[in-house]
Picture 1 (tube, protein in one colour):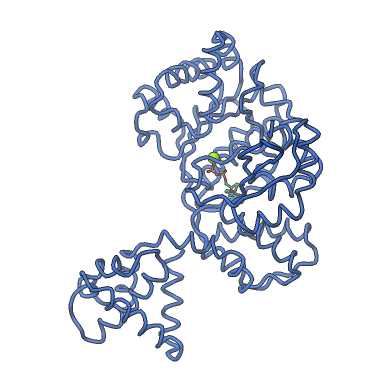
Picture 2 (tube, protein in one colour):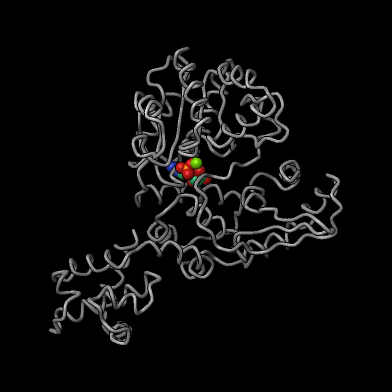
Length: 451
Ligand code: ADP
Ligand code: MG
């Protein structure tokens, strides 16, 4: 299977290359002598084809696949997955987590060797979650049960859980630590039902010392899985075993979750990971840059690039990391210093996607605030210059920071015609090259809106 081939490729290309280039590939077809993959971007496709086609081909063949060539396509843009792709690196050597005896067809839950406490950057938004995770990782007597971590995508929930497992594996090798996603819990449960091994299943889950279930919102509405989860949960809590749960929202906000499960979840310590702030993002970028410096010693990185990325990519740490990875690879490929221009060129798609979340309402509010005009005037009919100019600026920003069409923007500006909007945007474009104050205002507003 591809999973096993991946392990072999990992050995031949190394951890960093694997994580950056191979892991993001999705195998989509393996027939008629062609192995087809999907890569997330055109750049990655080209890079992988150039540098990794051979090892991939070699390992596929070794695994017995009759492959003549590989083909890599660019994946169509889809919304980001809700949960982190679980990476394979430590599958082979991991003594723990414990697994079901027969798991050949099951997706495993290996620990990502990169997700440690050492590599986790602590800032205001995540300090509580981090402290709680640290406490659990000490492996001392259970003080809160469960630890419930929640927060949006890419804020570090999975990273913290893996870090707990790594730490416990070192400090308390006597403990049986089981980490898996709620989805995997369900698969294992269903498989156990199908193969009439439900007793083994129960016994296995009840024999662990620390159970960590990631993305528990997944089992909401899945009745029999919830039921089984509830029993497992109770049995472990009764035995004084530690449970760590993560979800993308607070227990009270998970729909279709049974009331009794919800109230049990609420008995422990509930900590949320807040959206990252600028300082945390910059800290993460700096930490990762240090690591890249070792890998690409010749590369120079210009002042302001990390700050620029921390300002512009605000959604998700995974995206932030991906951007940096690509930047280093690209710069080393073309042998250039990492400058703002290079970043903009090589990260167009990421930067554009991260702009998408700015709304017209936010733009209007910020612009009104900045120029000290009323929001109702900004979208209203008044034509005096002190209002008309900010209005044009807001139109200009709406066009540049969102993906809305001119007619849509017109509707949000009190039902104006798209030609009026176009005229406003042109006016600002014209002025900003000569009017320094205006150019500065635009920069500032843009920054405020994007951070
Ligand atoms: P979640 O499970 O909350 O969706 P992950 O734990 O998978 O998010 O994190 C996404 C990526 O961002 C991972 O590569 C992780 O290492 C990284 N990451 C998130 N938060 C931090 C942090 N505070 N320090 C370092 N890396 C982080
Ligand atoms: Mg996750």
